Amino acid sequence: MEEEAVGLGHGDEILWKSNIPPLLLLLIPILFSTIFILRSHLKKKNKPTFPLPPGPWKLPIIGNIHQLAAFSAGVPIHRRFADLAEQYGPIMHLKLGETSNVIISSPESAREFLRTHDQNFAARPYLPSADIIFYGSKDIAFCSEGDYWRQMRKILTMELLTDKRVKSFRPILEAEASKLMNLIGSEPAGGVVNLSRLLVSVGNAMTSRTAFGKIRGLEGSFLPVIHRILQALGGFSVGDIFPSNRLLRLISGTERHLKKLHQEADVILQGIIDEHVSRRRNRETEHLDKAVATGGEEEEDLVDVLLACTDNHLEVKAVILDIFLAGGDTSPVTVEWAMSELMKNPEKMNKVQREVREMFDKRGKVVDDACFNELHYLKSVVKETFRLHPPVPLSIPREGRETVVINGCQIPAKTRIIVNSWAIGRNSSHWTQPDQFIPERFLNSSIDYKGNDFQLIPFGAGRRMCPGMNYGIFVVYLLLANLLYHFDWKLPNQIKPQDLDMSEDSGGTVPRKNNLYLNSIPYHAP
Ligand code: HEM
Image 1 (cartoon, protein in one colour):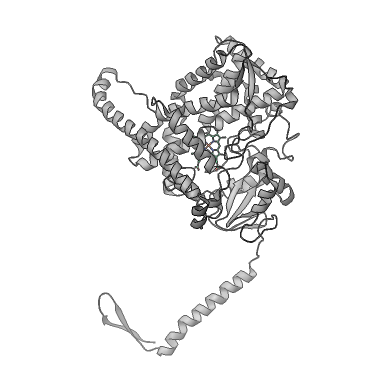
Image 2 (cartoon, helix red, strand yellow):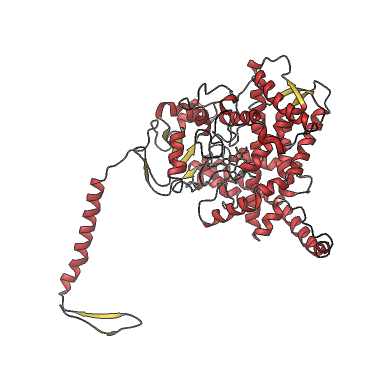
């Protein structure tokens, strides 16, 4: 066979002169394509096909929505998922609108998804509602996995929420905790306080001060918007389960509502950034002199730190929204549940108060955070509260990048993965008397909530695990230790402990359905 290049044509084109007949030349690609198609067909035939995970029967278009809606009137969605998982298993498939979802309800399956296949499931699905609120998913919690997420998460973990930074916020957090104790202490002895409301407001004050520093007046403007955004993002909105159908979002009014909320938040956040930028400029001018005089560092808030990391104001605003939405009420809600369980179980209340009081009575009658680590029973109370009442019972959904087979089931690419940490915490194969509040179960156990023990994962696990854990947990200990040290608590109106209502609300973060009202009797006046 003889072939020769005969020269260069137009541009870089090379013309070949060949002795092979033209018909044969045409047949070669056809032959190759046929072999390729046959081979892939045979491969598919030989490859075992795996079913989707089991799940309830589905209706066209809406899938399983009717099973959730019809039976769940008044039942929080994590409980409804847990009921269905009893029937269909810990890896359960649900079609919600046009989205395919897998609900994880056991420690073993959580380990498979969040550890063995963590990389594959590290992405977040596209949620139109989060996209509108977070400047095109420019935040950390809802942006998909990739360079942007890696870079922003690094800023959060290496700059914003390090142990050192959390320590630097301690005076602010302690001051807010003291203010709360003084407020409760100013009630006449035995006065009834709405502890739920007070906890939410101290949580917001703590987040505002660590994020924005000394900017005042946000309680009246920003926090109500945050509250409305939380309500709009919690649960499964029509827009998010039919993400490709914009018409539905328009007709249902959800898009207009979310855009309005986004604009309200944006105006306030931009104002805060402008103020920080101008303060920074002034500080830089002043600093030249000050630095020489003091050689000291100035107190920075989270917006300062973010502005030093990026000039992109959209990114700063999206991350600040994350901090408020993901971190604002999770700690207060944990304390609210811990106090509720302790009120329901007076002997546990006595035990934990004894421990806390013995410790701080010796330490000048002040709650000193340096000893939190030595309060073993308090730590067990917090773990037991996370087990029974994880504040975020359904994790933020993840999305599979590639199709994988887990436990003999096929999990197609793009499936949304939702981990039900509430069901996992009450799994009867791992916990004895799973519905009872028994902090003692943690006293001689190494099980922790840090993402390695899959039977207790209130902060998630794997690459998308909560980066705010250190901050969140510090706030929980600080508030709980103060409440337990400074006051004795009684249920009002002669409610008996066993009759205390423990109904849960619904939403992304799940607090009590009804506020917790308690009588406070000072033990050691704050
Ligand atoms: C008791 C307190 C808290 C609890 C129980 C909690 C729980 C969670 C959970 C369950 C997730 C989802 C993890 C996953 O997808 O596997 C999460 C994510 C997240 N949390 Fe928290 N959180 C708390 C406090 C905080 C605080 C204080 C902040 C910030 C100051 C924060 C910021 C975030 C962010 C940014 C994400 C998204 C991480 C990512 O997608 O890479 N959280 N949190």
